[in-house]
Length: 433
Ligand code: CAP
Ligand code: MG
Image (cartoon, rainbow, N blue to C red; front, side, top):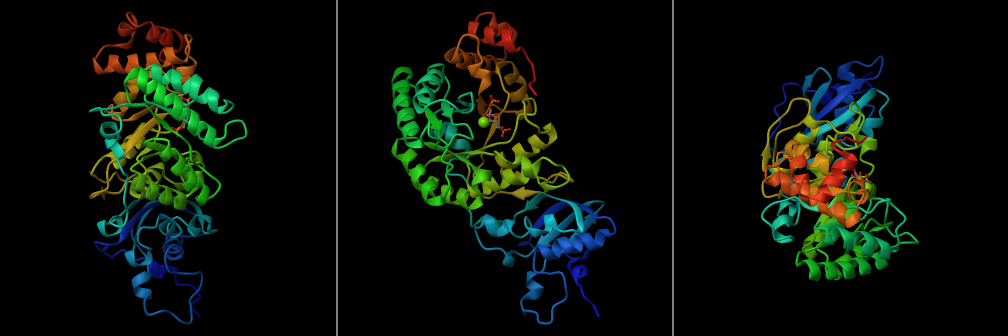
């Protein structure tokens, strides 16, 4: 008697329809399992199958099966019918081809590399409120970068120190935003309400003194959705145009909830990716950083950390450039083994965030890697480790940006700019690890 039907989910003659979601996987079968056995299980368990044949089947079954239609070495493409996904729900999608299959005994490794999302699926999402247009709409400039500083040490400043000592200094030094660190939420020594109130107060003072627009990425990450909504409203009521969310630890439902409010309040979301590396770093297993970034654009995060290549955190240039294109272009092509083609329709482009171990000496190379200055540039230690203090640290960053914009080398520019000179004397062009 036939006990399993996994192979019925493989059909290399299948031509995916215009509305299918086409997913690219990297996989390795477990010892003793053939490639076909592994692929069949992946397609089955992530769509409508189970481990054994069934006695009764619904009439809809033929319309709910995914088919592995292309298999090449350790890569497989599987087409999923749109019918099996709830409209506009990333949690719904991810519990399918982001779900049980990664834990199956029959697969040794399995990685979700990318999925091509058809227009019929994308149309149920709002996408970012502003995306790249934050540069124009919030800061009233034609081009980037948007500049931000995260107070360091990561944790330990009171709300007043955060606002008055770091925020106020970096705004005066010419930078745009003070950003909460990912692990600062609402601790005893720095309660959220207090921080919002004080950051708003010093923002107003800095705006008056400099005549520039100043804002903050206040971390609304909360223990539950009700509190998350309350924190977003509080930030909005204090006149901020942004809020920040730790998108991975908060989960997709929280992100989609935050996006609803961001659209209602006409605000932008700064997405921090803390914890992403638990699923993105192993090149053979988990989910790619590219697909995580794609989901963020789909749901409606306006700007998202994608890495620097040259800073302190892992991330290859080829991958980071592929991600940058995915989140900033209207349409991207396939890169074998890395990316599927994607058309974005009316979903706005995001602004990539480069952060982690940056300092003024690294900025020219960073802009070259990104091929644009339209990014969010975020520095922590690279401003507050400046020998002349925090405000001077911010000035040094702005001077490095000016030098690049004018096509002048940093060493030459530093001859007439003492803050940049002091930064180069301390860090030079070192790449931290
Ligand atoms: C940067 C940072 C950011 C990381 C996140 C930190 O500080 O605040 O959280 O950049 O990494 O805590 O490391 P420094 P990524 O500038 O002092 O390194 O952008 O890669 O997600
Ligand atoms: Mg941080």
